[in-house]
Amino acid sequence: MKEDPRLIATRQTALDAAQKILMDEGVLHVTHGAVSKATGISRSTLYRHWPDARSLRDAAFRRIATPPNIPPKTDGPLRSDLRWLLGILMGALNDTPWGQIAPQVVAAASTDEEARLVITEFMKDRFASVEAVFAAAVGRGEITADVPVDQLIELAVAAPYFRKLIRHEALDEDWLDQHVDLLCSIAKTNSGQ
Amino acid sequence: MKEDPRLIATRQTALDAAQKILMDEGVLHVTHGAVSKATGISRSTLYRHWPDARSLRDAAFRRIATPPNIPPKTDGPLRSDLRWLLGILMGALNDTPWGQIAPQVVAAASTDEEARLVITEFMKDRFASVEAVFAAAVGRGEITADVPVDQLIELAVAAPYFRKLIRHEALDEDWLDQHVDLLCSIAKTNSGQ
DNA sequence: CTACTATGCAACAAATTGTTCTATAGGGGG
DNA sequence: CCCCCTATAGAACAATTTGTTGCATAGTAG
View 1 (cartoon, each protein chain N blue to C red):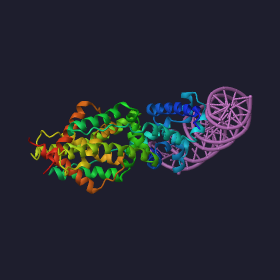
View 2 (cartoon, each protein chain N blue to C red):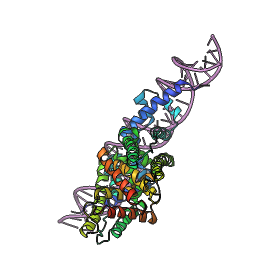
View 3 (tube, rainbow over the protein chains, first blue to last red):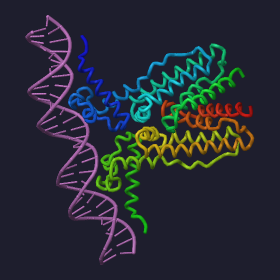
């Protein structure tokens, strides 16, 4: 038995609007009333779908924070793989809803277990991608196993996030080139000594 | 003509409570009503001091986000100076209100010009401290001027913030030792080539 | 002591939040 | 095509929150 298409349509319309409000005005303004006004969906219907303000906000967060699937590229060389992967990550921060919403998820995570789960899951995926790139480089013999890979992964991801979320500095191609260069030089000079 | 001590007392008591609420329950719960209930100060008095919810929240943010003065230590060696400075930064993240509040300032900054100002000012101070340490190392001839100092500074500060605010991983002495080791090895191997 | 001003308190309007009921319209199964 | 089920819209409603105002009281400065 299939799900009533009206349920699906309502959910989609409502969360689209909630997402937009979340990005434009912040979590404080994501309420049943605001979503109702934005969509024309009646308040009572919204309450039926999300019984309170918190579950509505959670739903909006969760919808945005779903990590895009990143097709792996690990055929080397390291610089090229890293550049490619971090390019996607940077693109996501610059041009997708995730980039706009991330600060608010970060904030929610400090007082809310649910949001913390969302973000740590998300980061685990990111780290796994970078990890795979380094592992492949070790497998090819491009770098040796005694490189401090865990630290490098953390630096690789930390820099763009810090730059975007906390410093509000531009993330552009030039910056990324420099960043990848530095990471590679660390990996190479620490390799096999 | 001195300021009425009643004004000072009210401000202090109210903001103490606002700060506590901000840390424990998040920015959403910092309201005139909540502060009034927590302090016994009447709502009308609070409204007289802070005309709307936003100015109350801003005041609470601003009070916490005031950077502590860090006495500079730049007498070398680089590893020691860096370890000392980042130790203070880490301590602040772990054990002061700033560490608890930072995520919410980050979030506010994404939709609020005022909060963005608070955080960029704050970071400018941090960067200046780290910069001074590297500059001193260059001055002593411990590293050469062609080290990518700006990138190193960013990595130095980004890592602890990312780790604490976004990954919610522990910031401890062992981690910091590794972090500083890596930074120094980058600085040294990139030096004079 | 006097003039000034911050506070507390109560009453109030307005907006928001959440609930419930009914009528209506859409969808799925026979 | 028809009937049953269910989702939605809309309105009415209570409770809470938000912000305002007027007045009495009490603390402060000169």
